[in-house]
Amino acid sequence: MAQLTKKQKKTAELDSEKLYSVDEALATLREHKAGFDETVEVAMNLGVDPRHADQMVRGMVSLPSGTGKEIKVAVFARGDKADEAREAGADKVGAEDLMEEMQNGDLDYDRVIASPDMMGVVGRLGKVLGPKGLMPNPKLGTVTPNVAQAVKDAKGGQVEFRVEKMGIIHSGIGKLSFADEDIKANFKALTDAVVKAKPSGAKGKFVKKVSLTSTMGPGLKVDLAEVEGA
Image (cartoon, rainbow, N blue to C red):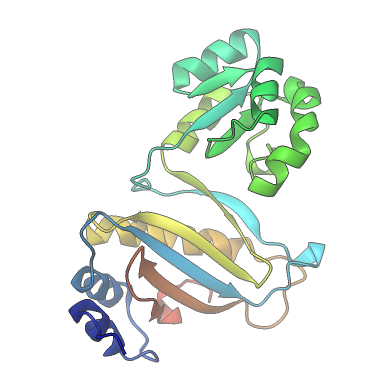
């Protein structure tokens, strides 16, 4: 049997049933940090079955401390709207030309935004953008006449959350190099937004478990007292 590394031994010694405050969880993750700037991630187990439309949990939230990640944004717009998107910092702006590029596999974007008049073009990309969660959606603010603000929001730390089929939401909330207070502010913003997005079809306990982890770190259960409304 292969011997465990020092880091693996430290992880194995952790109490898997312990409930951590966010401060304690961050301190523990820092003790187990790797040799690069890891992403801090939240996992929320929710009491929903997303196969039912009235139990889907999805939304956008602006993380006050940003994500620490460079976000690539593509915008479907023409004329003045296209100019506004470029000035706001969009990485790619186009119309039919951008549609063709995406159909040919150029999908290296974190967010796709469209002005309402472009949905006839964007609609042809449903089978391409849909599976990647990139399809512009007016409910999420990614179909909007104010494309410049949407680009600024995306670049400034706005993230999308969406429950997966097992009833879990995963989201990065910053880097391990962030100050504790910055990560905690992002944690609160995300968890508050998820709680507020509780769907009408959710019955019983909504937030069942919350965990904090880092890219290479252990998963640590967070005391639900740290989550408002849980």
